Length: 400
Image (cartoon, rainbow, N blue to C red; front, side, top):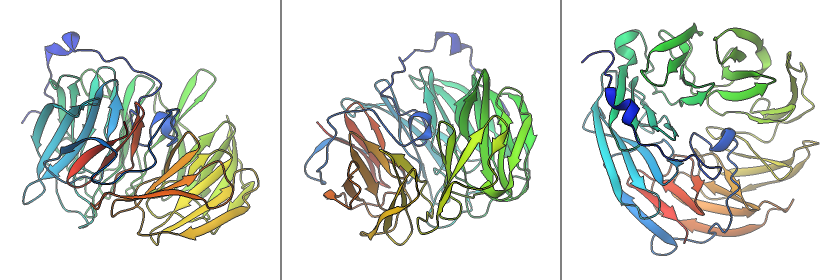
């Protein structure tokens, strides 16, 4: 298979209008996990409150992404987990619009909990970009026409991660940003969105990590904040130039949250740091050491910071002071990150139970507990007045 597969149909690709209500990447708009959507559901089950359900051909820890009227989701299947799937559904009806398959070119070794569809795709008005844990990457237009394909393992044969990769691509400064921290040739790259070719590529430490970069705008510059085991590094999104590194901001799975001149990092539990054009303050403004994350990223919402962990604890601290409001245990462990909208916070555990809390209250107030009864590792998406949840078996559009 050629390293690049190009199509001249790009110029004729259909366009989908990007709106403020879309959920185009991991953790949604600006990677905050927060939506402006209204009239969202709070109660559902496998038999009620479901607008539509669509069966999926394989497993996935990736999240669905939504742009316009299209829902994109990835899966992997096969006895060796080497069959890779990208599917597109009509957001209103759940009708499958298209389904494309790829054969994996990289290793499919991973921890039993995960699979090759662990990286969340990213979408825009032109279509979707899907990266798999095998190092295979493809861009499709909104109608499913292949725009280009790359085997990153074919390009960089030493790429390896026996546990499985899960960092998600993002779009920034008109480029497709591909994080590839691993035990082999480790890098962060910016790809041309039209052809999939490298615009720039910078070496990274050969250490396994699963974080996704954050995008930050400073003046006219667009920056990428990329955390790894050796610290958080700021890259110029246009050139790849390293601006600064914050050694205390390292991480391996959870991703921080930006809020103006503050950044909330999953270090020391969760900590709030000041950030400016020169870098991150050496010492945190506060550190809530009891607010711990395992796989899920902290959520900043309504003046509070929420964390979840592998033991089922939900912790809420005040965003200004770091003072703990509560720490309560609910059913199950968490891999998915919390999401929020309209004064409600949604916590989806690994067995399909979603606990909805009152996000306006400083107290632990449960609005509802909803059970789909299926394995759910991916973070939910919010768009069009609905909550989209993918399980290992299906994708659900929950709402009216």
